[in-house]
Amino acid sequence: MKKKNALAALLVSALALAPVVSTLPAGQTAKAAETDVFVSYWSNEPGVTEMPVADGARETYAEEDRQWQGLPTIAVTPGGRMWCAWQTGDSVEGSDGPNNYDVMYYSDDMGKTWSEEYMIWDVPDDSVRLADPRLFYDQFGKLWLVLIRGGLKGAYAIELINPDCDNPSENLQTGEPISWMKAPPAHRPTILSNGRWVTPVEVDADAQQTYICNPDDERGKYAWTTNTSQPAATAFPDQKTYGEAQIIELTDGSLMMLSRLPRTCGGGMEVSYSYDYGTNWTPYEANLGEPYITPSSKFHIQRLESGAILLITHATTEDRKDLAAYLSYDDGKTFPYKMMLDDSEMRGDWRGFGVSYPEAAAEQGENGEIYIVYDAGRYGLKEIRMCVVTEEDIKAGRPVSEYCRMREIISDLGEYIAYVDTEEEYERYYTVESGTAKADILQNLPETITLIGEDDSRLTLTGAWDCPDYSKNTPGTYTFTFSQEVTGMAQDRYSLLKAYVTVAEEQDEPDDPGGSDSADPDSGEPDSSVSPGDSGGSGSEGCGSAAGGGAIAIVAGAAAAVCIRRKKPASRGK
Image 1 (cartoon, rainbow, N blue to C red):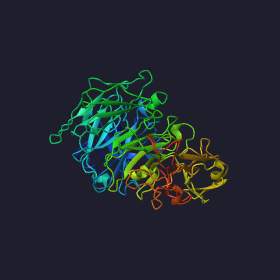
Image 2 (image 1 turned 90 degrees about the horizontal axis):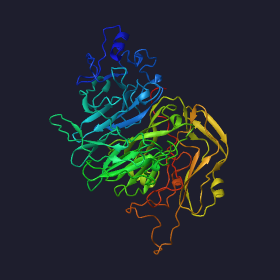
Image 3 (image 1 turned 90 degrees about the vertical axis):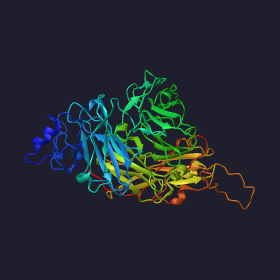
Image 4 (image 1 turned 135 degrees about the vertical axis):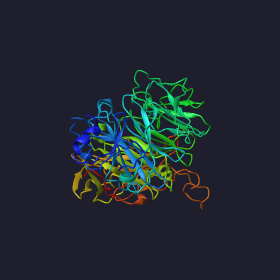
């Protein structure tokens, strides 16, 4: 039975629920043809959340039936509304999950709270699944939702015509699906300086093809064609299964393409270049070192309004943890700044507690805010999280701007209690002089910690702190971890059981006795004399680690904590 027929059977009244695949207002009735490539509903329409996701399925479109969720995408409208979409449905993602579908929520307060109602996108044919979606703003001001039918059955773009409308569940209008290409893109397209769009596609991961589009917006023509005669060849053809490649244009007009590798190959990422807009690609290069690494997972790269390159990836090849943001000001040659976005606890398999698949909105806030979404515990915690940072924060290696918000919740369906504070007051972020003994640090950390849950519950833990790789004479930021962990249906989302100690570089005596010991504020270099501990004790909103020199800002496994004392925003499913 087709999904639309299942819904009709469920509704014995005269109410008809319209699949939104046209420019009709979302609440207006229309009949779906058997040939429709997509159907769409709003969750607050009568009967929708009781509707099975497929004929004979026990799972419905209700939030409480979701067995997993992840792979988010985000866009910010000119009016300040956020849209966030992701994949869910069935018991597993991918080709083994024929009932995968996509959902989309919105926020009108810059992500502090999110809509109760959500838009559901699916395929009327139960044998075809939907892959992870993409939100894409083009240079003409159009917001596209890119939906991918699994099994190489096509990538389509649907325009969200009035994304800033009042009451979207009643008034949002969408365009007809436009066929883009058969093969799926792994990221939203990159808009080049010549106005064309370019994207790699997921077909032959060992010989990466790219597609290019010269959009004719006036005529509504968006034809994609492959322009690749020399694909980017991997050095690991027998091991590479996924590419999830993404392209960024460099200042000289050349293109740099990054691609995922297995974590045991080449550091988990490889890089190729094209000097003719994707016609010919150099062979992939691997083993480039941090930040060109992944633990067999997706990354994200884009150019910011300032001209800097932002790369979001994992700071380790070990597993899907330690998600970090890096900044480069020399077209990716070096990344001297790094900020840990999420180093929350990793308990067991990444599917339960790992963090992965980041994306930053192409649109920044009026104060330079960068909006980053990712999934956490895709099958366990079932959370979609968001970090809001600025370049200032990433340069400092920790939140220093008033606009920074860390690990906020867009959706939380795992029913885990998060601890948000501690009863004990102690410094969790501070800088010490070179030569400071570990014992001197440990005496300032409590042996007993009482965690405070978001439900006002208490958990008292007694243990010891340690950082095995601490080197008192080596500058960098070191993570001290408490020996006891949170267990059961609770989580340390905000890394309360970690402390961050920066060993400062030794300062030469200034020639000018009246000069300042601080770094030149115009130099772009972080001021290592500023202690993160200056921002407060366990209730501090400061978190992160100070940046050092060199190609990578933080050394020795540095990590960052997040804002605590931040109560959980309103979310659905609780």
